[in-house]
Image (cartoon, rainbow, N blue to C red; front, top):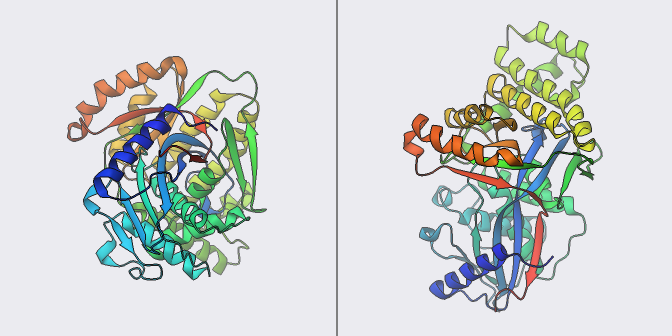
Length: 415
């Protein structure tokens, strides 16, 4: 793929940062990784459901070049106050170290740590500059960054890994084992495997990916991300961690009662589902609410997938909205700013569906919108959101996105 105007502008910004910091990336390579938009099932990855989504055109660009010193040197244009992250291979802080908990550098350290733990020992140091425009919270900025770091460090060292799911596993391990974030694999899969204008369908039972084109006759629509302007803490500090633990607790409860399951997605039969609610609803009302969302979202998933294949984006939007209500009322993972965005979007004619995105609490909501209604949605948000949440009146943003390739590599941009 030829670089876009946006890619060239990012490269210019990176070269300016290189001049300012003394990090030499001139003549190097640029890897671009996308954000993602999950159409279903949000929070389904750690519950064992099938997944479906697309890569979206908000990106992280990582420019890098071997430096011949053996040392790793990184600078982020988005977090300049953290300075240059510099270390020798094999010499990084211990996992979950408090000293690095608030710096973006924990991702660079974590990648080197996990690669080495997997027996991969990069010997070639790199100079690298990172710049991105993915909003924080809801579009998987951390997964995009982690994947980019892994792929770029492997490339600079001439290391090839054919099994892409090993890349997914390592990216998850960086967040789980080094950073302490209890993420699943939805984000990594939806970015690494994303293809332009295609939906990505992941089946955990076979650990396989299928690409699903949108059916003929679909109306012209856009994916719109509604950034609330709030700063979401890492998943390790959020309600996400609590919800994951609750789902795992319910699985343990059910297994003790001789239910043959390994995850909540194994509960597919209506009669089994109703029996569980009747048996445990009074004793574990909150845990059963989590099951209500997963069970309902999993049933809706297949309807949504069929609608996508048939070009029925209106039905996809309706199911997206129903999932959002379940996330709000049963999973209880949303937040006031997220729901304010959803309320506003729901009032605009031409918005087909809306809900919170990602880990929850704060960050971004999303909507499926007829293309001719995007401006009306933007105007509605501009009018209503600052009134409802004045503290974020100068921080929120509306991003109209399209489905794109998850990973692109460019040579010749850094001349």
